[in-house]
Image (cartoon, rainbow, N blue to C red; front, side, top):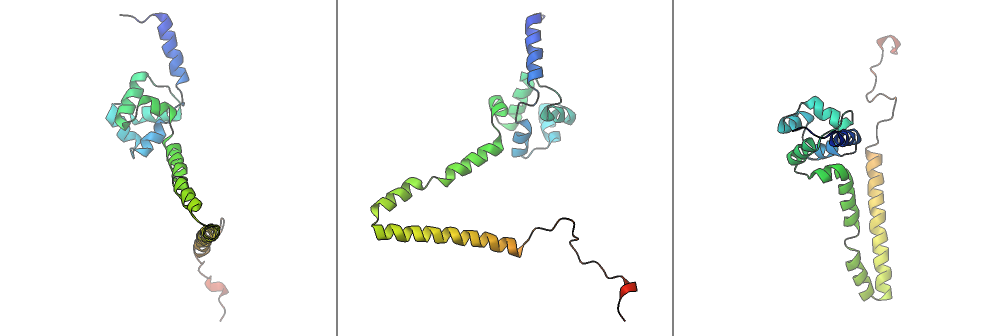
Length: 160
């Protein structure tokens, strides 16, 4: 059975549009798989995976479904969700998970207790900032352009 030319044109247009509008590489890395391992799982070459991930070539719906199955992610998720951003959003949500409880505690406190709680929170924040600063002082990043080791003195310039 042959595919009508209109459908073939739509499928070819979809393949052209499918070039690098996905998060396949990000999901593969999230699942700790190499391109070779993913290729082996879905019966493609590592080169094909590389080309799809980089956007040098398109992909078919069947290929997208195989990739999704191998990565245990839906094809829609491969197209719409960057796993790195999902982690960031989860971290952002975690920042605020205690706010209702803290708010209730503050409301139940006297004015003096609230002032003390504020002082305590500010001290905790300051302590964290100082700890981070101390770590940067103890372990400074290497300076660009400088050697990481002491040069060995040249014997010709040694004082005798």
